[in-house]
Length: 290
Ligand SMILES: N[C@@H](CCC[C@H](N)C(=O)O)C(=O)O
Image (cartoon, protein in one colour):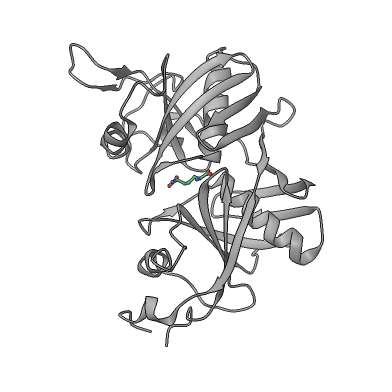
């Protein structure tokens, strides 16, 4: 029988971004991409991201987190998932300050209220090879990429930012005026992005307010993407469209994002919602080698 059979999982969401938390700390069980996909087939467990907790590597951290997208690929960051993980850890440890480790960062999380968490999402990486892009460019505030006919593109010049994962943001006047479900996968898989990319449409409403919709790499259209909200604020501030703090309104609700001047770290604040806990049905892993 699979070592994942009957494991307890917590189904949550952050602004409608569907999250499953699987706590494997205290053991040496690891999850493969196919196993992650299988977990998403469980009743009510369709997720955008699966957050797998393992024992931390460095001192003082509460958990090492591996992040899977619904297609079984791995992501370096997940803002909404980080808040959900912080909620499970805060509940169990009865603490307000938590530290998560991921493959790319160490994230400090703070419980501000029962259901509200602030997460330090790290420093944005802005050089072309940090996004990464295939070809060198001097300025990632707007890159030479267009969607649509070359003589009449419908979208062009996205900003690109790495927030632990790669993001491209097209600035538009109306985020509802485009078919992101069609455009998203084309841009996600464009060869200019060797690691693929998360694709957002952003509208600057004011210097303190952005509206955003995201097609997530490996997960598709989602109701909210925390790292995209961080990337959008950084990109907008770099273009002097906003200041260094703004509310980002996503289809699922609002996140407050601040890009601290003192240490360059981006802080995301927003809610989490607990849905249910359940045990993983052994039948999900029936076809897999143990
Ligand atoms: N929903 C997440 C981001 C998810 C990761 C992304 N799909 C990727 O592969 O980079 C968030 O809230 O940040």
